[in-house]
Image (cartoon, rainbow, N blue to C red; front, side, top):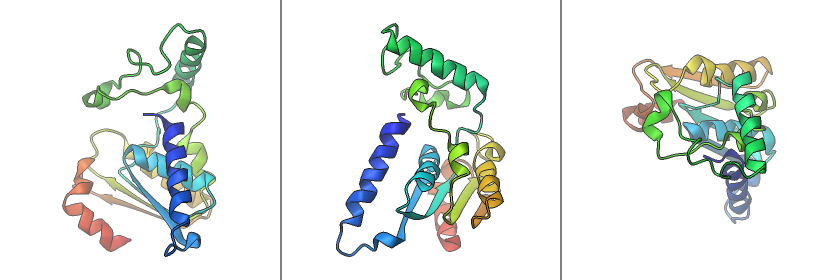
Length: 183
């Protein structure tokens, strides 16, 4: 889970697609699901080629607080001094509700500058956010709901939909067709 590398990949994909002969570079939209929802918001805020965005069951890092930044900067110092590995295998495993993803690793030191909540303040393109009322991995009020409020407060068009019976992975089932009807 490397936010900086992944946002670079997204921006490179946009660069590639704008060179295609049948693509109108003035009408580029992006969609991200789960962790990709946060990547989508950040990219929409920082890449002027993006003209609209949609985030499904998005993980926005809504629980960031001082402890997150303290851990990130401490990890950065330890990585710089060679005390821990650059990709924190031992220290970067998700915990709590995310422990089912123990095969993935977070590099908190690299994620420090990538605040989706701060980026949301810069989003000026139409945004659709879809959340599940039975979201089991995060608090939707502190993630998709909060981003929708921030974007709306900026005067940017935003639609926020919560499907009451949908879980995090329900977006890939019957709700996928319902969501398409709202776009």
